[in-house]
Length: 112
Image (cartoon, rainbow, N blue to C red; front, top):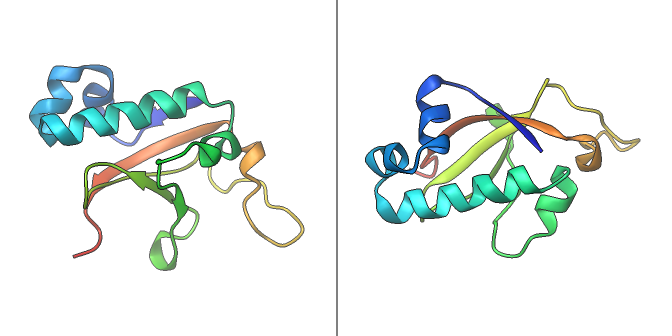
């Protein structure tokens, strides 16, 4: 999958391990860089969704059309189809097979 980044800081962190460790700490950086590798390797979000342990899930409310996956608890990697909005199926749900490019928006603990 192709990835674009919501900021220069995110791009640097996902492309340089040392920067990721500075931004998120060693444990979180390790998990987030793994998620990044998995996203790059997947042809689309349907494939990424099927990978075990990613914690892939759609977000709701003011984060509608965004998705998240696990970093080190409680952090999440938040991304959206790019360009947004994505294709939807007859039920109005984003067609994950059609999402072959995403934008990483942030790494955040949005629970608290």
